[in-house]
Image (spheres, helix red, strand yellow):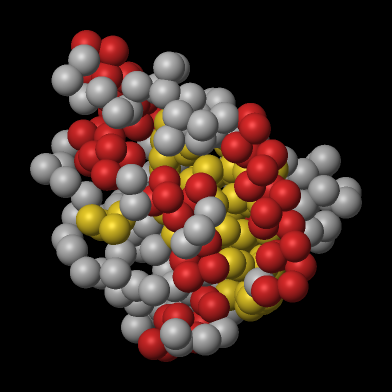
Length: 261
Ligand SMILES: [Fe+2]
């Protein structure tokens, strides 16, 4: 794994050391304060370049093109909101997705199933352990966004999301967010409407290729702005849960991946 991860800077394979404890503490503090943390250069540059080389033809020949119009809630209607309420504005998300079963033999599949990685994230989250998904498609994904393509405004369903940026585009592709735009008690539809109409300006989180980002997005609205230029934005997403054997429904697999197995 040393060829893949910069274990000198990020000694996640040595949980008994003081350096490990310091790293976990730094990540936890930043996550609490900012709702996210970055580990720049986590992926070794040679491994990053090799992954991009491996994935580029797979994206071209074997990826599912995920394109859908959706509102920020990914729901057709919200009780108490008129259908034309600006918080329900429709936006388009387009990307090209490779599923877990297509990444098994890559460094991404190896990292996802490498126990120290899940343990490191569990320690940051204050959990005894984290569980990989048992879903054959969803566990680890890679997405490519070409010119004009974007991941549009949404809130996450999971407690936290772990991503690894593999390639930055020439332009666009910025991670934009509004921290705690809503809370578990207050949906703040007016604030959501202000964001979607442009009255509320989001923050931008700079992320460089090779960086691991961990983000709490349940109440933080976020999007990736449309990519410009001929270099695709490529990113991997690792999904871990607090309980074992989490799977998507067949319906969800069809919606996200165009196939159920
Ligand atoms: Fe998200």
